[in-house]
Length: 434
Image (cartoon, rainbow, N blue to C red; front, side, top):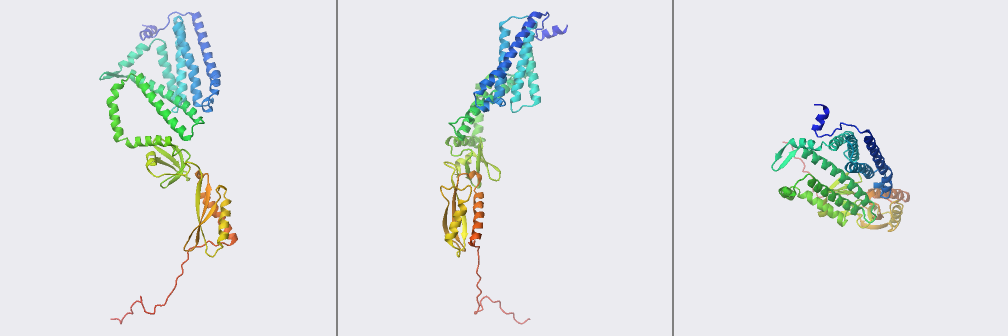
């Protein structure tokens, strides 16, 4: 038995005779289709993508690379399959066509994997070689023996067959659906982010809803593609619902709370909020928690459900104007009118202080050692902090008070010594020693 007979037993059709003319014709067809595919991917697709938002149409973007590769090699694979089904060629020509189909499919798979977030040189090379081998076997007519061999390695679990064939099918479907979902989510996210009719919170809500929809659709398509009966998942669904009711109650509550926060727009990315002792601006609203970045650069993760049930100060809910209170004490002996004038002067000179509403000075109380005032100023950028506004105004006021002789008091205590004529509180004189 020679090598040709061995390959034929595996289902691979190896030609015994060579038709040079037909082989050259097939090679010409393959080259023409490859050139047309290259023109589609490198010339036509950039013009089509140019009319889309820059995040999608830019040549270096993920969506542009995926769409260009899919258009180029997808066209080549479809064209090769049409030629194979419509034109009868000698065996050698079909071998060349099968090799072209395998090479195009492997290149497309490696391009898609390279563009994904989990790409690596080893994974890209493995995907190229795996798809090249499997596609070549199928294109050469060896799909049936290979599937039979893979299906024979496994075991039966009830009415289901678990084998290498089912595992390979599941893995291939999962990878394909993941790449499809990633491409669809990238395109829709870019379109949503470019929509001028949606604000930041609405864009975030739309992106999350689209992501959930795409994920659910991909899972359902995958279940149907691998041949899993949805009725068999009824018990599993009941157990999952019970687990959600007990163990995942908080997680589900945070998920629903996050969707509600995005829908009613009470808290949006960029808002300056105060939750208990945490002050900062909202960086992002996640599935489980809201990320709040403080002025110290610390990122606090506050559960979504807590923002729905606990009091929250939102300094920029309806507008960004915030009034800052700056307490100041002045000596009773100082010129109070001059002190108030200097306070206004120091407040107006603040670079972040608004002129409308204008800064104001209120007498707050007559303290134990000072006349207490409140300097009231308005700002529109609370995300830049309020402590630095107070520091700037107080530093400027300190200089003005020094230049104009206005005393800044400090607590003082007067101690009065009184005579004790009655002898109260004196220690008794000691008697004679025994």
